[in-house]
Length: 265
Length: 285
Image 1 (cartoon, helix red, strand yellow):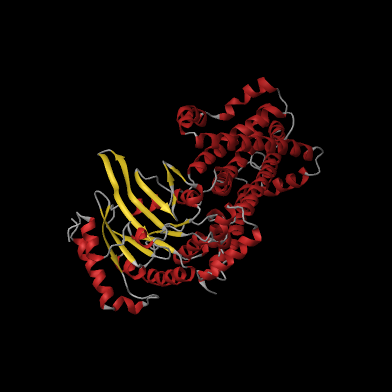
Image 2 (spheres, each protein chain N blue to C red):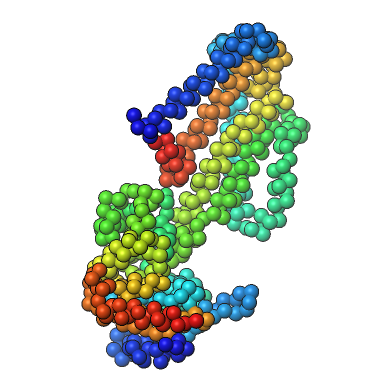
């Protein structure tokens, strides 16, 4: 077997191996009795709870609630992020004027706003959607801002030498070369939108997976908490993979897509 | 040779400048009269190009050569409609290219520009890149595909129509960008050091290829380079420019018959011109 082939197969062996080592160590440490299984439940207990999760009444409606918050929040973030990002990218004077405000809101811990959102919008979905949108907005907006400014000068000159209309340059050049930046922002954004929805539910929720996590904590059921976190992670992973798949579909030509393919080979 | 007096230098070689068309009666492909361009820099006003007169016949290949900073690229960008001149007029096929700082729509569509970098769009296939100018002009999809396929074959890219630019070598990318510039059948092909970023061997091959393409399409070409043998190999006339201010110091005809081959570069005549240009450029300072 040549070296290249080994390199290609290696991750498929090593990744499961690492997972097995972690889970076995975890199981061993707990069963040897060094830690309290009540506080730190072993993997088999978590697995049991995880499977049991899907026969719990209401699990799907809680999941749907959280998904709705994430997706609506994310959609708002994409629309506003693209709009504001393009606007600031195109108008440097405006960007310079609002830069201090952007930096301030960037460094502010945005989850701290959730009590305010609850005061404004109540305990329903709206406050979580808003937090989700707020968190996802920044990476999308900042990436768009960067993307609008990163259109290659040489490519602009090509359009100029071809006597392209403004609308043609926008459609054929700017909107195309900004796409990798949009997807980079969206990949970070979808993860933050998930975080936003969950944190919102932790603090002010009566529905959703975040609410279930808090309930399990109140019941001191650590195994259930682990199981819920696992389920949440899988939901988050699913959403991320959807965005990633969209990226592969829309910008197969970009380095971030074909580069991965090349290194895997 | 002193470079202070351009007419003196031309008188020694040939009298091709602005008056040539008046004597023959035909409208030249490109007519440049008293063209200049100033830039405001921190140190004051710089005359990047000053008082350039040049007349180029249809089907003629003119190479512009000179040290960096001699204004050759600035001149080409003015001819290409990318940079407005501060003085003078540029006529393409008897039509004024510039109206003040605005470019004339119908005059610029007669031009094709090839840049030092291929500047292909990475999201378009080779075929779609070549067809881009036709798309912008609203050509029918089938027509532009057919035309682009022909051009891909002309520049030696058959079989790569569906590839993305990243899958091509530097030389192949530059072939694609030449095909793109040719897609609108321009009256005048403008090339700004198109092979400057290529290695010496690829470059030599691209020169032969370009000669073949130009002869096949009967293109009129203005070719900017800082490579003396390249200029002499390709051109019917070599325009030598000198800096501060950027102006034409001499115009040398190259009478070697075309198509030229690698053997041309070993002839006495060829090397005589190369040597003369090299000496003149060396003496500039």
